[in-house]
Length: 237
Image 1 (tube, one colour):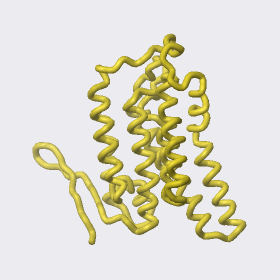
Image 2 (tube, helix red, strand yellow; image 1 turned 45 degrees about the horizontal axis):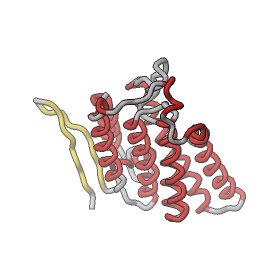
Image 3 (cartoon, helix red, strand yellow; image 1 turned 180 degrees about the vertical axis):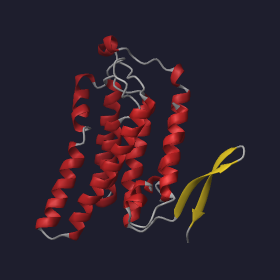
Image 4 (tube, one colour; image 1 turned 60 degrees about the horizontal axis):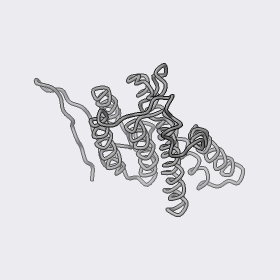
């Protein structure tokens, strides 16, 4: 799993070397080419630490859920809310208002949510295909890692915080936290699935926002050497 995890981020490093300001390349690579890199690095480190200690935690089996559900039957709310409905409604509402109301700010809000959500989901899909980790309570389902619900909800919360301030952003992050924990509550995900999903969503929410603010000074690309490889870092100032 860790090797696949590193491959995913190496692919992002490669794409970021092609980044040009305001292109789709720069938005896709924004989690590492903007100050959102701090979210990416800390989240990646947390994911690896949680995964390294996975064996020390006992995850429930599906048949024992009723004995260990902090949210009880209300976990279904997180399941529904985290399926991207919030992101879609926000994006369509602001794009519609921007188009019919001729508001550039609303158009940018809707576009921002669409970008953060689409890029997050794309990376999640790639991760699920490459890793194929079985869910803790559903051994026949290999879509555990990483959590798409967490990615979508934290992308939503990050865009709301960036665009509308921390009053609304705090509420959105609280909802994102509930959605993420509900996935563990209902035995659909391990903790490391949720941590990485939240990291991806938040990094794209803020990374694409920094691109709107022209904050993209960092460029990464992989390099090959005799005994292995490395990362080439460029910083424009």
